[in-house]
Image (cartoon, rainbow, N blue to C red):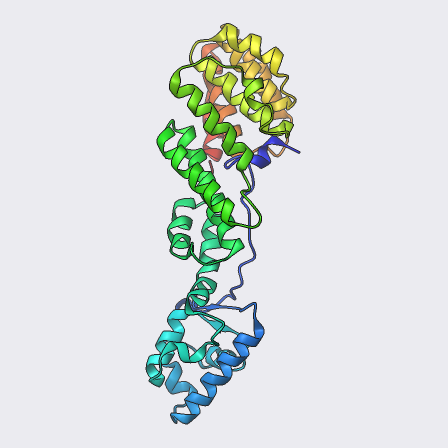
Length: 331
């Protein structure tokens, strides 16, 4: 398993099937196909009977809000309208929206059924803050799918907080992720990673020295996870001027991913002022033609640009500056 599949920015976003058709502009996000076809049929039958009882034509009921074709699909049980659509139709037909539901199917469940496509879309696009804002009003509803999304989105926000040294925000979102995971029958999808990051932050906050291998032990059996965390930690040591310690730990940690090793060794060589060696290692990564994540490639080109300048290779530095722009806006 590649380490890139474990972390936001280093992975392809999770995509869920969105149960929405391609509709005209004013119909977008109005309809979602219902997984319970019987519920759709009952609602459609009730709507059709009530419309006829009121002496209202499809054209009159649809008005400017719906097309007659879409209204016909609802009445035939082919499509399931959003709660907002039902509220509008109920108002026109002079009944309470609850008239259209079975006693076992609450309005709250219907609202989340209508909201899920947009929640999933935000999650798949990496808009985790918006995803949480849309999903949290429904957190009391017993839905494993929703709880899994809430847990995962909270984890990604916590990781973003961690990467920006906002430990308070990271602790908060990681705790939220674990709490949602406990309510979900599937469990927390990132429990082990969260345990590691919380332990790491506690060590960093108290300023204590610690052994990364011992911290990892028992938390994650996945070598890709250990590789990534070791890589981040070692680069942090280089950034803090602890070159000797980083070099010693590198041998002990035994990072297995070739690209991570090359990038760290390039930065280690540069810290020892061996910019030519650093350039060669980074150029090997670029020449590998592997399908690498954009943030990683941006970092590689950014470092290579600096090392080219250090060796007075200004043409190479210019090429790197241009190349990294391709990844900057997709980071």
